[in-house]
Amino acid sequence: MSDDDDIQYVKRQRTVHYGSLEETERKRLAAAASVAGTTPAATTTTTGQLEDIESDEDYEETTKKSSTTKGGLPPPTAASLANKIDDDYFDLETEMERDKVALLEEFERKKRARQINVSTDDAEIKNNLRQLNEPICFFGEGPAERRRRLKELLASLGENAINKKQTEEEERKIQQREQEATWYHEGPETLRIARLWLADYSLPRARDRLERAQEALEVPSATRAGRMVEMQKKLQSLAPLCSQVGDTRPVSSAAFNEDSTLLMTASWSGLCKLWSVPDCELKQTLRGHASYVGGVALRPGVKLDEQNVVAMASGGHDGAVKLWGFGNEESIADITGHMPHRVSKVAFHPSGRFLATACYDSSWRLWDLEQKTETEVC
Image 1 (tube, rainbow, N blue to C red):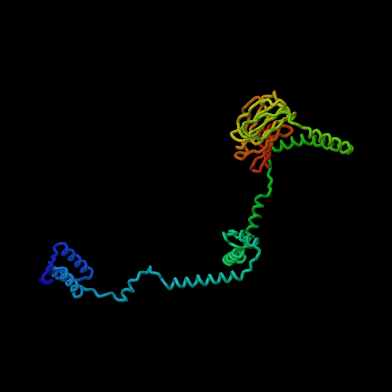
Image 2: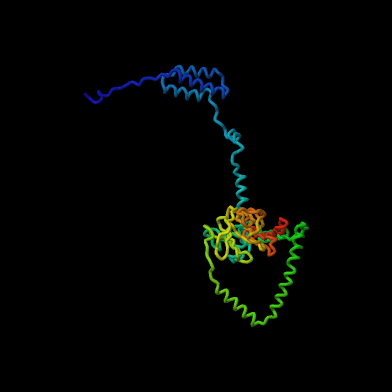
């Protein structure tokens, strides 16, 4: 028995399509006919041909024939394609012209940069960059690169850009000086009263001080030198008389009264304390400041047994100035003119009528305690 006898031939079965394929093809042809404007007869003929299709091969052949003979549309021409180009397409010629213009501008700018004369002093170059509000140095930039960058900036802004900046800065400074110029106006009546009182108080004492200075000039120089040596020895012999813990936090300020029998201290805890000298006995604790206390002062001419009289003053970190009396832990009055800036120092006038306060906003004020008003601001 040969090898050919073992070969078995299997006949390929035909595949018949029903329903769905025919319906899909009918819809496709109907859509094509509506677009192309063909008659329904052509669609009917094609559909009729589908009924005779018995296999996939026959379907493909029939489709090719129908597409080439019936209902076939001519291929689009170049003219029709050109007409269909949208207006949003890239305009090549316009963009090329723009690139040419930008390139020419870049060449002109570099040419101007080469013609600009710039100092070789690196410090002057940094100063010019600062005047142009540009960074004076980039990371990894050397003097040569910095000089080239300044040239490019001047080529873009103009050679006189630095002069313009200098002129604008000078005009701004002149305008600022005009705004800060001193001006005068009529003061209130309280200021006139305070100044007249100060004149009456100070002029006689100034006369007495000048007389004492004139008398001191008549003293022999040897006597004056002996007095100075004696005073120096006394100062060198000074030693601590007593010591006391003032507060749990650092003590920020301290002040004696006029006869040195009382000492007032202030601390960062916000407490002010009154001590007796020299036994360092705590006489009074003043509570009222919420934060640091910057300066304290005792009013001259007020005795310890006087009640409800302003005897002490303190200035706090919150800008409040408090006036205290002997025998009372609460303040008699509060001065809030400096708020919210920190008050650094307070001091009474030798007469006891005026209180001076200094603040961290670079101003100081003079308060009239009798008129209960602010007298001067500087």
